[in-house]
Length: 350
Image 1: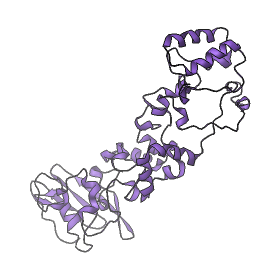
Image 2 (image 1 turned 90 degrees about the vertical axis):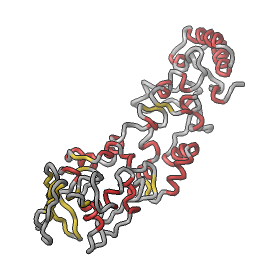
Image 3 (image 1 turned 180 degrees about the vertical axis):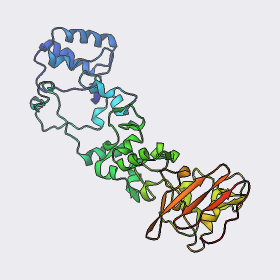
């Protein structure tokens, strides 16, 4: 007896265009573990005068018979990335045959397929996988992801509502991780507003070319699937932990050092203007990066916002860069300038 994956049962019938003797050879070949020469001989015998029903099951010489080495399903095992169970012909790892179904009634009767697709007589009928069953099947092997989903404080709705196959092809793909299309195009399939934002704003945060740089795809411990913590508040006392996501790329000295030389271009002489804006907002205890900067894209340079929110009010902002620094006007306040070479003395107040 051959391995389970080498078996293909036809019950008590066999393709009508195959003689009984030919069919016996065919059946023996499925469990045969001998040389490729014998398989080739059997293949030649089967190819003589056979109709559509038999030829659709023909296997290439030397290949181990399975669903994916047949002419029926061979295309699902071709691609840059092939799911290991598919590559190994281990279809029953994921698919379960419906033992209660009658094989001879297994032909596809749908109008659009009845002329193109017909299961060979005796072909096993496989139960279609429902969304919950498909997820359970995937997570039997991908138990690390199962644990991530289970513990997620911020679950990904695509995983919860649509399942693994919303983003992944279960058989093969031209993309890594069996993704259906490349990131960020895959993400834009749901997050179309983000795609529009990026198209309309030329100054983009570099990580947006790969959403997975900042976001967890399956579920995370932080809000909005962020990999690290980043506050959603505009005004709060400074705590480095609240900006962990930013500091995974940016040097913390941008905010932690009061005087700087090369750490940031946003300085008035050596006075760190990030420190001043984030750390010295005494009235509120501190500000967040998001008060001045857009997170994904902006029409202005340095991701500077054109509008910001103060309490319940939306106020305009205008940033004007120059060779050695720049200036900013917010709402009705006067222009405040900075210069890296010749420090500017700005008047206090509005």
